Structures are given as C-alpha cells and as structure tokens.
Length: 176
Image (cartoon, rainbow, N blue to C red; front, side, top):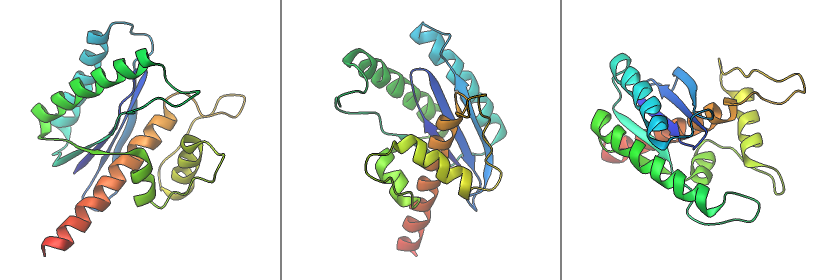
C-alpha cells in the first residue's frame, strides 16, 4: 500500500492507496489552531501511528516542499517552517514505514494526467480533476460554494499517492 502526504504548516492531507490504486483512506489533519511546532508534529505523528497500525504501508510519497520564493506566495518565515515540518515528518515516516520518496507537485499532476491551463490555480484545477475522475472522492462546500478547508489538501495527497502508485508500477515493469 502507498501513503501519499501533502504536508503543510496548517493542514496536512493524507491518502492511502491499495495495490490496485484504490483509495482506502483519504483525510486531512487540521493544524491551524496549533501555534507550537512541536505540538503540530505530535498531532501528525499520532495520525501516522494510527495509519501504520491499520495499513501495511510499503512506500510513502511526500510532496516536495517549495524550494524558492514566488511573488504572491509564502514568505521566508513560512518556507522555513514548512521545511522544518517536512523534514521532521519525513523522519517520522522513515521510522514508521521506511525511507520516503519525494515528488514535486507539478510532476505528480503530470503523471496523473492533470493539465493546468495557463493563468489558472493549480490547486483548484487539481481538486476539480480529482472530484470529476476519482470514484468515492467527495468534497464538502461552504455556503458560498468554495471547498471547505482541508479538501484541497486531501486532493493533493491523493495526487501524490496516485503518482507514486504510477511510478511504482512503471519501476516494477522495468525490472520484469
């Protein structure tokens, strides 16, 4: 089974896929109310331990953290915090499941066949693709018609997990 993680400072999405690429679990961990870095890590660790007890995870795929500044996006402080969280959660995954692999969001979307038209937000396009193409993936919306917090993170974790699943199958074909 494959675990896909979309790690963030506020909400971390996770998806578990079976060997056929079907969703066994897809949820998010809301960390927005926690200000303390170590408390955030404890919360994620508790969920990862539950996942390790329930599923026989063979490989973990983690969305690669942002490596550079882009105007209108995260500040240096946020990028630094994200890198810390990503590193610590990577270590937790290593201890629970073995060495994680990393995928850039753009590469994962490409492997899944998601095309983001110029000028559109990748998260929104990706979420709509998953809603339209993945059986059983449901989204709750606000009264204004926007996805509730956490659903884009679930979607992103699914894309990472599915891209990892695709990559694992391609590697298995190459060794046959």
